[in-house]
Length: 390
Figure 1 (cartoon, rainbow, N blue to C red):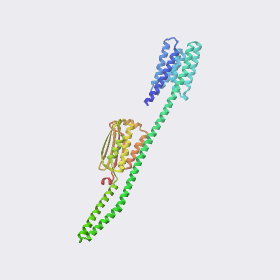
Figure 2: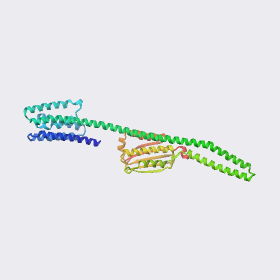
Figure 3: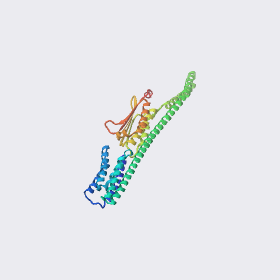
Figure 4: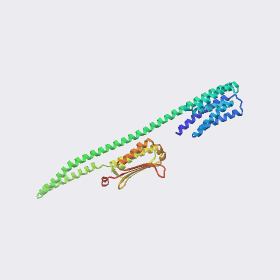
């Protein structure tokens, strides 16, 4: 925004420099007296104040000064050559619904030019150049104002497109995370189905074989050789049964390596010119839904930090407590600025993180850090009874 305002001001200063040079050329040949010097100085001062005026009252005062200068030029011919500067400032703030004052002062100025021409107060060359310069300065100011309005419109369109792009990116990330989550759930469901099939079929058959072998060993207890053979068979069946039980437990275990998942996300966003990211994970395994939730929250938090904050350091801590899992992401960037400018990205990004955490019965907060610069994302997810027993 500052760069755009600076470019706009420089464009107007360039226009006014051209108009001033032409005004000086129109004044050549006139006698240099106190009135001409005063006209030059006042014209430059008024047009300069129009550029530095801040606030509605200051702009109105500057516009009134331009009108007063033209009125003075009507009665004092020495002010005529520098009147185009005032017309430039009058034209830049003219609106269609308030154009009558500007048209009126222009008509009065035209009659004054004709009167000065008849009275011989100024040379024909000076009056002709003043007329041409006044019209040219007005048109140049209107053209520059139109360009400024078009730039403002294009800037709004660009900002709108950028917000939509950020919203679409956030939506795509959310959809991708949800897709990964659904694939993970489908994988876990299939593993659970296979585990049930093995447990209900193979496990039961092996248990039956073990019992039958033990029964045969007891029946042939008076035959040491045969009993020993049945005992060996029973040990083999029991070992196979233990392996099946271990396989079923492994297939039915929905725990995932939380530290590996978070480390992978941190490595993906690390860069040479980016902030230093410190990761500390005090939880080895967690349920798949908790891992997916924390992975999505960390990915979105780091993405927001890279896009909206000029952070130098980012700290990621994930801890397992007796009754809940906790994830904290902090940075030392411009938290206040980010809070005012995140716009649509907040609705998509922070809203998505909050929904994921609250869907697991957890709590989620995000905002500027208390007593320090930067941003803080805090998420906790309670443990289920199955997690504590695991």
